[in-house]
Length: 121
Image 1 (tube, rainbow, N blue to C red):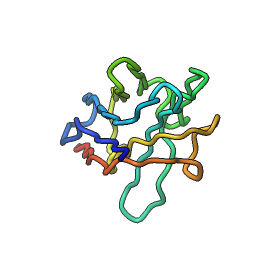
Image 2: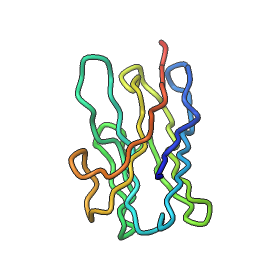
Image 3: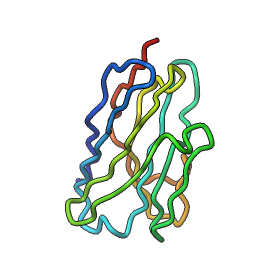
């Protein structure tokens, strides 16, 4: 059974940094695009960043220049390095895996359980 397990969330002051990790129990991990999404209270889940199957990296405009997504295929891990955090980054962050060439909310094959990130003023 495929599992994605996030870790690294927590409470941080504005301007601070956090690193999220996602451990995947997928045999063919390298064949999956890996993405990060987030959902704030009362809002829809939104795309944050992804490494596609092709290796291309994409970011939401709201996090470009502040967040860095990466992966380690040998360890079957995905990461989201978040710097210069803002209060509006507060949300539950989800790791996602997709066999699709694109990474978006509608073509995710597997979701993690989510990890809370709270940015205080």
